[in-house]
Image (cartoon, rainbow, N blue to C red; front, side):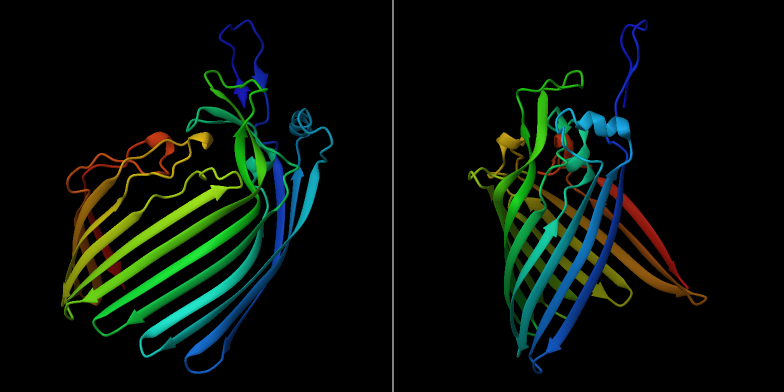
Length: 330
């Protein structure tokens, strides 16, 4: 990053916000599906990987050594993962459960970022090359039932993540970016927990018409029982599809409930509830052996003003939008 002074008589300043980090990665992955009988099966997978980072810029390395004087220009990590899942399906009834273990290395920004400005929370970020590898243990379960007319399925998963990487304010440091409100350094919590659950429903009114609905819930806490950032509030979607012959149409609503489990400690603010209505219609036909699919519609029919929990600096999503797509198949 080059910094130009307001006074042209002063010298230009320069620093590496990313210190020219090179990454080499190799991975061995194995998977096996074992059919126990006509109704149940087991799936196993595992991987072993080698991950190597090297700071190619001496200036960038020396900048990071201001905060971490003992770091070297390279770091090698061995990553392991393993998972197993059991599935059962008979007479429309199905269930499954599984366990998994995985590891994640810090990203380049998390490990080597140097005064990276984040306009979301108005802070400069500093990485930590001494971070340990994240370790995640996952348990998941699902249960469902399906008939020719309707189907329902509930799925959930739970993660216990050791050495959970995130950023925390450091009041002893002065920001580099003019106007920044502070400095945050990447660190690791002892652990964090994340829970996800979703409900999927479908009803077939006739061969031409069907309805689908979905509810999704997520919740996360750190080791100090603080809410984790970027956890989606309760979100939902519902759609009604009609198709006959070459014609099809769909009307759908999607939205979020009000965000109650937000994290002001990590720079989040509450986002309000919203609902968006969309409509689309399509027609398919063939001309001289060329299949043509035409689809048009309206997104956000009521021009709702909204932003989601993950939108940068609460920048709103697009308003009412008309679209027309034409696809050719040969």
